[in-house]
Length: 325
Ligand code: PEP
Ligand code: MG
Image 1 (tube, protein in one colour):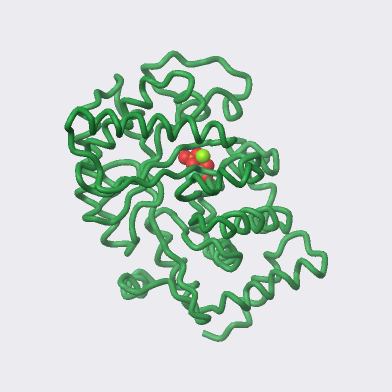
Image 2 (tube, rainbow, N blue to C red):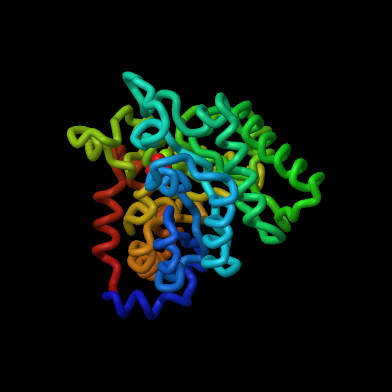
């Protein structure tokens, strides 16, 4: 199978209906970058910057981070890298920051909430990214955005830093794209101006699923209890697709489920054009996407839904089993 996937490396994830799904990889450490070549990913759809903070025993300095981000961009050789700003709190606690004692850290003071309330580290990180880009394209995404106002604030920190770097005569990026991760259901119902303002939306399915089903992603007893292929969740995804389509906003999905072939197939059939996953999943997902007609997959999903199924999984699995090699 490895060889079969290797032979697909340079080929697009084009389904038999003609639709092309763009496949990116998730990363977080320098050591992940060599997988870009081997996996055939178009770029890094999610770079989890907190990992580099977590492996240190003190807060990294701006210049050190700028060097690191420049090396990540060098290693990507012009392919896009979506740098997600620090997502700490919840399950990711920095050893050199005072832990905050919260009863529900996943719903507590984490990610962009920390960044907006104590913007020093966020601004330092944004400066490092701007300097690292130095004439190249920069893609930044903010984690755990729950409402329009949070995105506006986070974005204006970035704009202020850009302005500052420019007025100091420093090199700035050739272009900047600013995205938001949709990880809380509320953001799907944000005013239309959110979808107009944001350059792209990336669904953080791990968190979105935990809040949609109210099932802790860390709790073994409940983490696999609900199926993302439940009609309820798929209908919710469809609404997000519709809102992004209305404003022409690119939409991706970067949670773990994007790397599961059957899930990936359903997400692509619903119109999510970009999927970002661990590098080893790209081959299997691409192989399946290339074998099928996404219009037919959508038909299977719609029929299961009309028949009152709770999850479309059995219907999709049956249909797949009937597809000839
Ligand atoms: C997610 O929530 O789906 C996501 C991609 O971010 P993380 O897993 O780092 O929370
Ligand atoms: Mg998340």
